[in-house]
Image 1: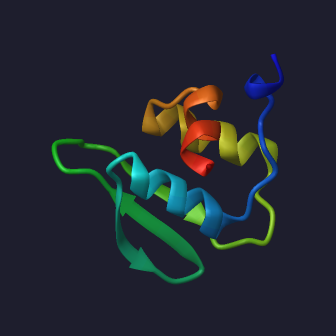
Image 2: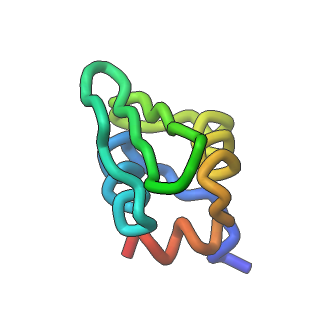
Length: 75
C-alpha cells in the first residue's frame, strides 16, 4: 500500500515524470505548461520547491495517471 501514497515532489520533478508519460513542455515561466499529442488537455505545473498535495492530485487527475503510475514514473 505504500506505493499509493502521494509523494512530496517539486514542480520540476513532477514535470520530469510527466515527460516520461509522453507530455511535452510547451512553456516554462513561473508555471510549466505541458501538452500531449492527441490530447485536448494542457497541464499547468507550478515551478515550486514542493507541490501542494491538492495541486498534485489535480495534475494527476488531468493527466489521467494514478498515484501508483506517477510513483513509477518518478523512479
